[in-house]
Image 1 (cartoon, rainbow, N blue to C red):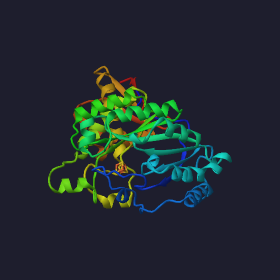
Image 2 (image 1 turned 180 degrees about the vertical axis):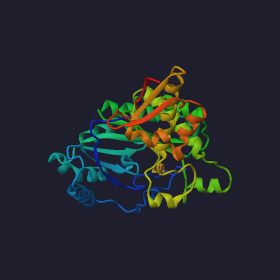
Image 3 (image 1 turned 90 degrees about the vertical axis):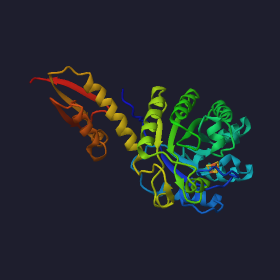
Length: 347
Ligand code: SF4
């Protein structure tokens, strides 16, 4: 079954970072400043307006795509109501003029109540991403999150009740976590039926409490191989529930690369996960073919790199398994992504 997620047209997102604003917590893994590269200043309504105007002025590849203004990087609903009004209010003229279709923001699960959800909806917020990180209370406590899994469930219910789409951000390899707990958490998260999911491997970034634990040998991050394998299994869980995983791995940036001290960072983390999943998909099809016959394996041209894998690793593994004997592989432009078509050809 194809595992890719395709929306009709991806929205054009105008990001506005509000680093650490509204958040009095200190999760062990977090140092927002080093991840976003943003200074801890107060984003003003004027800056929001200027950012939107600036982004709208650029020619867009898909002008028909809906425009979203996204407040990322902090716990938006932890801001005072006046600040929330100020920031969301700056986007209202663009919503009213039809230049922006929707607002989205991220926040903590314990900062969402029915009243807050109703207020956000009234302000044109269509999507709220919850930094859930885990659905396991012990992992949440060990990571210094300061909220429980029950609060994640309550927040999801409040947002859905208000008619707001819900995104869940989950982290792999947190302190106290293990693959079994992470997969159980993934299944619990899928049961909440979020509209989208993001998966991030836990990284050790400078200036975070986790960096100190790592230095003391009290925290060991996942290897890249294990993180990719775990992300692939989680993604498969969400795919089985038809929940799109819209991102795997943090957005690469110079400031992030400078800040990462250890952990499974890779600029193309998501591609590594897709490549692992695609390998399994192709392998299953090739295993099922009748032996002694010649076949043509047709894959989408756009999938050539995830089929091959890093260093042509997937092809080497399929060859070592003897699965490519008598198989001609072709990459077909226009073939649907992540589809595998095997046809018998005359010998
Ligand atoms: S709640 Fe979010 S912003 Fe606050 S410390 Fe934790 S990860 Fe960082």
